Every structure is written in structure tokens, then in C-alpha cells.
Length: 225
Image (cartoon, rainbow, N blue to C red; front, top):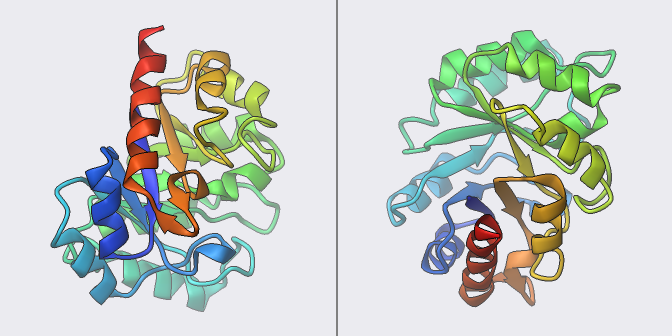
């Protein structure tokens, strides 16, 4: 059972680690869903924490379809992630029909040489099962970050359960307004083994190590039941 916490800088990453997070997702501009951090921010985070740091690779918040120039910039950014100490890349791209853009996903994997979490671009694909199957066929895609196609994980719990059932790779990483109040019910209903938490790990907008600790204990307790 693993808890991933979204952070925006080194101090937040340290708080998440102090609370027992399994890893962090590093992104900036969190209010728009997270964008690519600078190489300086990446290095400052990987220098101070001992848990894996997965870095968001998303140049803008204007959808998940990229033109040739944007794709070229994305691949160039991907090539720098390992040098900054990243353990994984968080990325997602769709083609003009809304399906997984397999070509760009493969290009990013080759450039980064890191395992990938395909982010919530997944949730707007026309077929979640089809998108999952496409990603399962791409070596290096280790996780799919998803709320089951809904605004929140609880609303998408039926799809999350269906995606978890019988599927081992990519790992289904549940996301979407997960907090202390709904975590156990969500785990029991869906069978999720990994969850991704943003606001649920914060107090007044800041990462709260005590909340992270409580979420971690709940997650481990849910594995026992």
C-alpha cells in the first residue's frame, strides 16, 4: 500500500516525507492541476528527500493534445529529469480523437529513461478500458492516475473497482478528493493499493505532516482488513 502526496517545493516534500509518504509528485501551479517545475526546483527537492520524487511533465493547462513544437519541448524537458534526480515522470497526452497519444508517450519514456505515471488525461479519454489497454501495451508505463472518469475518486469508485479487478500493470493510482474521511471506504470498495492525495494532505493550503501520517496509518490499516 502506497501513499503519494502532491508537493510544490522542497519544504513541502520534507513535510510529506516526515508524515510517512511513500513518494511525492512534484509539480508547480497546483491550482490548475500542476505544471512542469523548473530544473532548480526539481534538484532542490531530490537533494533533500530520501523518498522517490515523480515529476510532472505538463507545459500548460490548455488540454492534453500537443502540437509538434510543444511535443519537441516536452521531450527535451523529459531528457533532463534523471539529471535532476527524478525517480519517475508524470505525463499524459491524447491525440485529436481523445485517445492515448502512444507515440508521444513512447518518446517521453525513451527520453526520460524513467517509469511513467500516465496522469488524469486518462479520465477524459472516450473509453477508460480502451485507454487502459493501450497503456498496458507500452513498456515503462507503471501507473495510471485516475478518478475513474469522475470529478472525485468516490464518484468514480465503480470504474476504479473495475480497473483494479484483474489488472496488475499499470497500477491503478486512485486520485480525486481523497482524504481521511473517505479513504477507508474507498479502499474497501475498489481494492486500490495506491492512492494520490493533494488537498487531503493539507491544512490551510500547506502540507501537514500530521495529516499525511494519519492517511498513511489508514492506508496500512485498510490493507489489514
